[in-house]
Image (tube, rainbow, N blue to C red):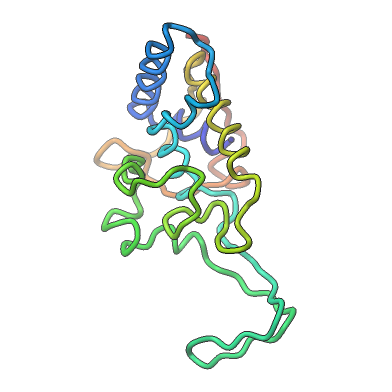
Length: 194
């Protein structure tokens, strides 16, 4: 949640689009501010925003695993049983073959074009793992993230108490941070009631 809130504070243009989506859903729901579970699937922009934020600023840059049997790789390298191996998810999430030529840039709408939901486990969305190790609680976790973020977007404006270096397009000039990075130490977020 921390990274999602930081991204909201850094990208007021995206925040406005996410708020507009929420206003449209409230109107569609007869003006009722209640969020029925079924409505979560209609939050396409929010879905994409969460995926893009976690793609670029996920909490774990590596996906460590322990082998359960001996494995021989396609290049002939043998990995013994009970050995730890790690997949560099940070490099994977910036692969232009998967995410296009601007894979290092924040562009949440790329996920709308890919047509995958937040809960889909795929090469373009490894936040839930893959294969028979995919997260069993991903539907529940995604629903909680979307519900909490939708409520925050509807009720608050999120602002940072710090400034960040911008590139020539006015976007933040970095593509990765974690809650433990220098970027986040002694910094904070403010929530202003709308």
